[in-house]
Length: 395
Figure 1: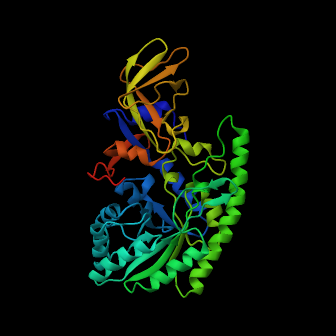
Figure 2 (figure 1 turned 180 degrees about the horizontal axis):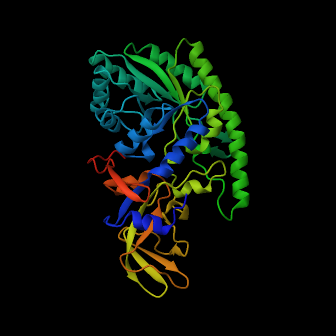
Figure 3 (figure 1 turned 30 degrees about the horizontal axis):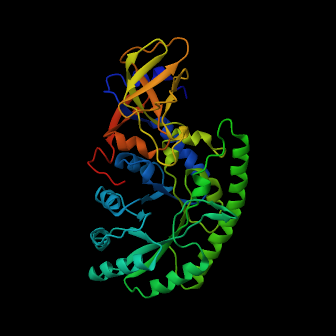
């Protein structure tokens, strides 16, 4: 598909800048890519990367392969449920009583909301509120899938449960909670899904990352099988075993112990995902800012500093897209109010012209804009609100 500068410039004529957009044809291509990589697993969408009810609903309705959403908090789950979306796995534990109460009310009204836990304290809190609401609350055990080498913790600092012994101890605790039902397991391998291994100019680092990933995948598969076998041998029937993100879909989907995977960033394909060897999704989402100043060797755009979380480095910044002669400055980068861009030679960009960017990670885009302009066949065909546009902030 031809998606050059002029294509998006013409498509967004008349839109106020800054403006965020989503290319529907490229989104559909990414949807098909996810389906192909997920094998025979159920695909539960990870909302953290998308942050728009309209986009989430569009993906869910695109194929019967998509079912359910993994979200990050109880308030987000309530927002999704009240917007007509159900089967909601809450990926992080809920600890405030009022929020647990809101989840229990939705479950009492027929919703399928599943909060996670990784401690006896979580279970005590869930049990108390579920008992008061006279319901049986489905819960999911969150297990740390980091791989440990001598002098190296390879993976995220995630759950406090990182052993079969720890799993057994919590299973005993679940039995003591008559108003709770163990519905599933979350076993996310962040060190596979979240580690780039195709960084330009770093061949040794890339090789090391791939070796560590290959070893870790084998260890994860053995550990995940052990924990699922343990849970079932203890008499618990699981509805699901969740794993995998965008860049671990292939390996996670090949694991017989897993029943569902949870991609999110794959649908937008932000810039950081250009630096993975496994697969290349298409850049479907981005934003445009306008040129407000121009000098002999640089231009200045209004806004644009939509950086991504994590340890600060150049890969966490937005990158200019479709204008290869432009680059961020080393001492300012993408700024909160303005973004200076250097160029060599001359540029045809004039005051008021758009410059297109991709964020490093997917979720930051919708935190900055109230709407996404949906582009199809070279023009804006619709607009959908983001969580921010709905007046919601969950992160």
